[in-house]
Image (cartoon, rainbow, N blue to C red; front, side, top):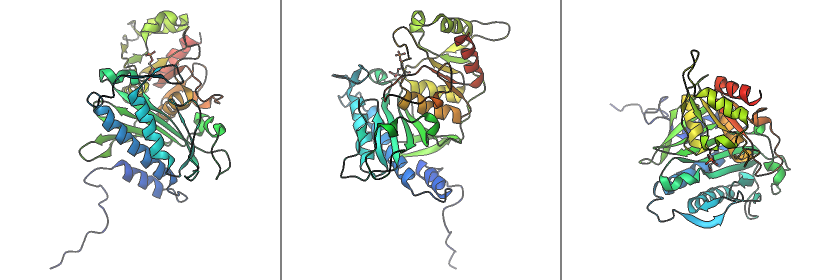
Amino acid sequence: MSRALSVGPPKESPIGTTLERHLLDRQRSMPDATGDFTGLFQQITLAAKIIGSRVSKAGLSGILGRTGTTNVQGEQVQKLDEFANQTIVSTVEAGGHVCVMGSEEVEEPIAIPPQYPQGKYVLQFDPLDGSGNIDINASIGTIFSIHRRVTPEGQPGTLKDLLQPGSDIVAAGYIVYGSSNMLVYSTGSQVDGFTYDPGVGEFFLSHPNIRIPERGNIYSINEGNYHNWDERIQKWVDWIKTPTPEKKAYRLRYIGAMVADLHRTLLRGGIFVYPPDIKNKKGKLRLLYEASPMAFVVEAAGGVASDGKSRILTIQPKELHQRTPVFMGSPADVADALRFANA
Ligand code: P6P
């Protein structure tokens, strides 16, 4: 007797939910979706897989060490930075989904070559955040944010398309290259995390609807800069690591890569801070492709992201590589820090 063929995939797929399936489900839930966003995200995902593969072999492929050149920040550029930057640019530029890109590694806006269509989105990214960790095999990451263009469609995008506040982000996220590689992203309503299975070559949903705890017990800041800080930041750090009858001392964790420190903060709670200091009067971290996308994710997970005075997402950018102070994490912990910072 012939058995009826099962129709369509099972509701709960036995292989779990791939990132591709998650994106297509999202696209199907939006009646006016054109597939542009899904296409762009798939290109970002491909770039992440390529970068992740190279990062995992960095120690073997002889591209460790420095190129001898410096990027727009005056920082020594690691060869892997250049590779990651070129991987994202070449993976995305031909897809017809973006009209201009901005990268930590490139001083000027990155135009889409004339032979490719000008898309409706804008992509900004830090191709390899924390690259100083590469040589010691510590976690590093890629940060990205997607806006809609604000200049007329059909023509090349401009700096104006890049200088948009984080509150107008369509989607943002990061890939952390660590003990496993994870892609975490949000379109504003919730945050979902996907873990990469190198045996299959796919990201699988592993952390649905990430919510940051209201309060944690970890603070993350480079205490080596203690004597360069405003005394109010010094007082906050002195307070947070001192046990009192009301609270235990917090633990210090600092990986030195914003993506990794904030990924831990997102999952465990606590606070990550990079305040201004006498060397970096505006802070060290860049607004458009580090602080804004991470703030978007942190807020979507129920956290708080401030520059010390106001929400990072409300800052109107004036320059492509401008910097901002960063206070991000659990609402209660950021509130404590801001109380000291603005005393
Ligand atoms: P410091 C990495 O170079 C980075 O841009 C961020 O990822 C990280 O949070 C910060 O700088 C670390 O800076 O001065 O503590 O080494």
